[in-house]
Amino acid sequence: DTAVSQTPKYLVTQMGNDKSIKCEQNLGHDTMYWYKQDSKKFLKIMFSYNNKELIINETVPNRFSPKSPDKAHLNLHINSLELGDSAVYFCASSHFRPRDRAAKLFFGSGTQLSVL
Amino acid sequence: EDQVTQSPEALRLQEGESSSLNCSYTVSGLRGLFWYRQDPGKGPEFLFTLYSAGEEKEKERLKATLTKKESFLHITAPKPEDSATYLCAVPLTDKLIFGTGTRLQVFP
Image (tube, rainbow over all chains, first blue to last red; front, side):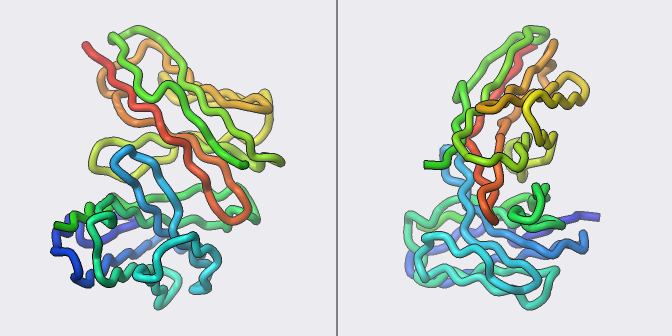
């Protein structure tokens, strides 16, 4: 069974479109994250939710809107896609919040977004 | 500024040629340091957590060590299947901050 699963694996779309990426974890974790990995493999946090509450909201354009319907799901909606949004987006989860205890993150396999 | 820096950016080794990867951090009050491995097309996979200076962890050909300013990932007699990007990360408040990674290639 896949612990953290995200869909779709690949997303190719035109500039200006709106798209969503879905993530689900079956580990019973309380905290979920969205990370963005650029072409140089640098992983940067975007958002974090703990028990459906937003706890981290990095400097991300407000075209990006996360949504956590329950503890096991964290989706990412992107409006008005731009060329610079092309990257790999990773969902992750952890049992603990990093500030409470050194939290080990479990990652999904990523969504490669290409904006044309 | 709190940051995590990894070196070298890329490393090419012959099979059996041991080497070390470095992770330097400037985060104060370290509450743990993580090492991850990432294969192409996949998400990072957890390897080790180190909590205090002097601590060491081992897994097969990999050994991670920690000092007050940096961590090393030693690879002994690597095999081609060890080829991957290795990432280190440290917690900063409620975030896990990642380094830029070292891309390791091991040739037979």
